[in-house]
Structure formats: structure tokens, C-alpha cells
Amino acid sequence: MGVDKATITFEGVTLLGRALTRMDSVCDPVLIAAGDIPLTIADRHSIPDAVRRAGPLGGLVGALRASPHRLLAVVAVDLPWIDPMLIRMLAARIGDHDVAVCETSRGIEPLHAVYSTSLLEAAESALARPDRSLRRLIEEADSLRLAESEWRDAGFSDNFTRNLNSPNDLAEVSQQPPR
Image (tube, rainbow, N blue to C red; front, top):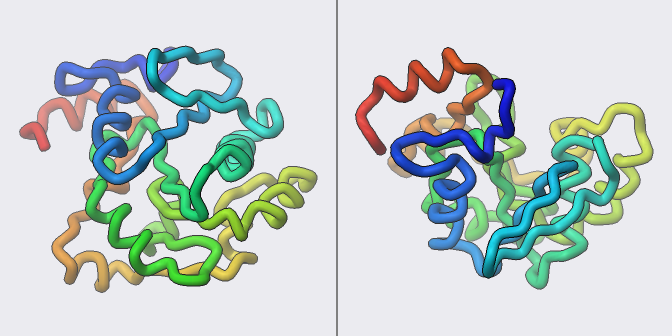
């Protein structure tokens, strides 16, 4: 995108502001893992990645360490249609599993999921590997996978999977009616 995605304005608010508003309705506190970018927002909890330049896995480990609760909802800032009710459903279904994720036609969605602090040790070990893929960590974990038919039957659309990776993506979603 050429700029920090959190600062991109979409439907009159930054993607970060949009994510915070949506997550505020299901999480307390909302932790912000900003990666290598120092971030200070009044009345918000910003946490450092466990390892610099480790991608989403570094943020996940930092957040799991900082979480005051057993469960942690994880979303990416470049998902403009984060669905708080779907997050709530994943949290209700996780049980004793390490992670609850939705399956889609493209595979699992690791950045719109609910993780348990029981995954912390495995996630820390994964940071030592050359492949720091969240998908690989989930494949190896005790995961609850919500089949696409299940979340669709519950009334959810696949909008939560739509991320903004390019100016073209932003232009395309900006043409759609607000959601």
C-alpha cells in the first residue's frame, strides 16, 4: 500500500479506528500489536511484538503474553469488515481448544480468530523456526475449525475475509455500499 494500513481512511475513519470500534463491542481490553511501528493512543493498550520483524506471529505471542484473559480475539487491521458477532461465536465454540478459526474456500482465516493462552508455549517455539506462519502453528495446534457451511448457516457472509492489500483493493471496496 505504500503507507501504514492502520492510517488509511475508509468510510470516514482510519482502518485502526474502525477495528478498535468493532473490537470494543466484544473485547476488554483491546490490545494493539503494532509491530515495528511505535504507537501511542490515549486510553489504549499497545503492546510490543515478542520478536521484531516476526510478522503476525510476533504480535500474537506478545498479545498472548499480555492478555489478562484466557481467550484472545485476533484480527488484522486491514480487514475492514471485522465481524464482532463472528468473533463472539468463535469464543463461544473454542472450549478447551487452542484456537478457533473459520475455514473458507481459501483455507483458514488466522487473522480473524480466537486464540487461547494455552497456545503460548507452542507459539513461542514457532518464533524460533524459519517458517513463522500462523497457518502452520494452527495446523499443529488443537484447533477448532468452523466449516464455511457452519458460519454461513449462522448468517455470516464472507465479508470478514476481505482484506486491503493494494490501492486497487481499497478503490474496489470503496465503491461498495457502507457496511
